[in-house]
Length: 404
Image 1 (cartoon, rainbow, N blue to C red):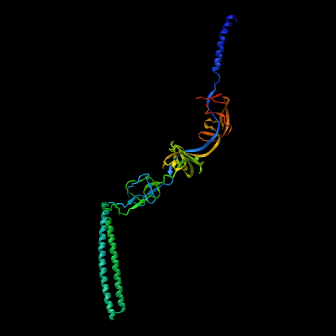
Image 2: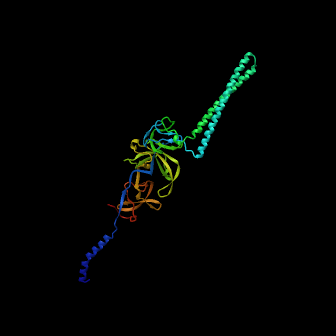
């Protein structure tokens, strides 16, 4: 090597070394920034979460006992009522209907026929009175003749029988006269127009409708005065302090629920959740179409509110609440965030970090909820695991905790 070449090599050699070192530094493997979490022990709860609706346990629908004109209901929704004391409304008789020409002529003809029958009955009464008076005089004459011995006892008995017969005929004619008078009154009543009908007054024979139970008026179904048939629904009454919650669960979730399970009632408008208990799982399912248009089989679950009424006194009938039915819970569970788990074949696995290096760790998973999973085997308390691992993380990958 010539002196000139040697000098050139010595001059450029440091630059070449620095360039190679820079390239090695630039292209060296970089640790992958990840989110890390420690495996912890603590409380874990598995719940079935679903919207519910409050309802008064016993709602009474007050209906009209008879047909008639219902007077206007002066009560308001929320007013207190007392059983068998508070009058909800009164029902008065309806006005007669208008008569069409043919019905009116028929009614007039019926009146005339009743008037003629009445006159006939009066004439029959006069005839019966005359025969009765004659029979009385004949009996008096027969008694005088019998005392003087001019007639026999049988003829006297015949005269007495005739008098009694005529007396009975007179009573029969008078009774028939009364019947014909009533028939005429009924026939004339059919011609009474609506304008001449009896108006409601304090002396009318009204039917008062009373509240059947103590409570408050929940809904007024027919407020204004109107003609109602028998059985028409008027108001709904219930006790707001006797609330329960109905939750319609998917049938696949409802089979996991049994009476007596704890319920957490949240998002009801108060500051803190309130407690409850499953009272009943109804045995009858029904079909409900979801917001996505999917038919679902649903089952109603009835929940009793366990908290004192002072905590939820502002709740009413038909209010929306969020319920979490507790299927299982424990205070000492080895748990990991659900976002740390991934499938390794048919098994569950996590990336456990040891000395900055991630490694696949097969785990046995127990119960899960929407946030955490119970770990039965494969991890220990305090182990560091990678959360929501990306495709850049694999066995042996150097990782570093994300700072942001």
